[in-house]
Amino acid sequence: MLLEFGAKNFFSFKEGFEVSLRLNASCPEKISRYKNYTNILAVKGANASGKTNVLKLLSFIQYFTIYSFNNKLDDDIDFHSYFNNNEVTEIYIVFSEKDIEYTYELTLRKEEVLSEVLYKKVKRKTKIIQRVNNEIVYTAKEFESLQILKLKSNASFISTAKQYDLDEIDLIYSLFNNIRTNVHSMGRDDELPNYQIASAFYNENKNVFQFVKSVLQKADTGIKDIKILNMENKETGKIEYFPIFDYEVKEQKNYLTFFDQSSGVKSLFQQLGIYKLALNEGAVLALDEFDINLHPDLLPMLIDFFEDEKKNINNAQLIFTTHNSEIMDELGKYRVVLVNKKENESFLYRLDEIPGDILRNDRSISSVYNTGKIGGKPKISYGQI
Image (cartoon, rainbow, N blue to C red; front, side, top):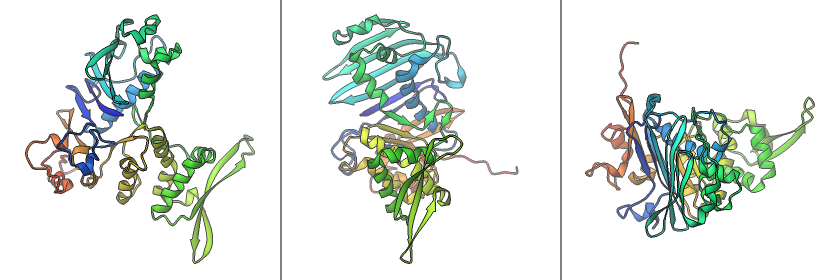
């Protein structure tokens, strides 16, 4: 379970930001559902405000802790400081697993790690692993095996310990490996799994495919059924998979191909499997512009997968950016973060951090947002172009 994350001197955030998924006692029970954290968080803001950079932090942490061992010795670490300055970047993230909190802190520049520290909190926060430069300088007793690690200046001790097959790191590794995102260091990955890759996956994973069909049928698409067919590519000799969409018109059965579908149906067919995998794995799913090509009325349905405890039995979390304003009324002020930019520097705040009673639980947030009183809206200069 992800509880917090933040950074300083990271992409457009010079002085830093902190995002909390914790809920305090003032949060209404219909939102908290008697939990002290949320499974859903929306990130709102104007174009170029820095919304995607918030998710880039989750993407970077996942890459660095899981894959950085694969870096070559002279590779830079794949992130950017504020306007590529050479000041230190500071990063942190907090997870909870079986009522134990784990805090990971990382200090680095593009060319080297300066420190990594992992803390564990049951009743009080205690340090369990500390790395300074390329040396493990402290481990709690259960992590003593990590002292044999030969560290690289551009790789995490978590990624390195996994390569050494040190079982002690498995739980920590799994927390970071459970982040799923469509963002990388260059921004949003516009390439969804193509329809053939998605079809092949659905053909092998029937429960995921059933989920995809069920959602598309409930989304007023007119689709009665979807079948996955295959044929041999005569040039490559490989088997290729593709979907056929069944419809009923005046009691007559008809079908359409993937290419006959609307952009919304294509998008849902390609990405719904990602939602189902996150729900199955109890993952953190971080999606940039998750609503592209989708009607606004579909968004509450996608959010409900993570909000409804009967559907989300493994406690998966959804963090997303969007330009849709009405979604704020659905989520309320405790589950929306606004990102603003001033003089090319980003900053953010959760809506319940705004002082006063401008935002109330019984009032529309989107109507206040549209006035510009709480920030997060573009300031456009209309003039002769």
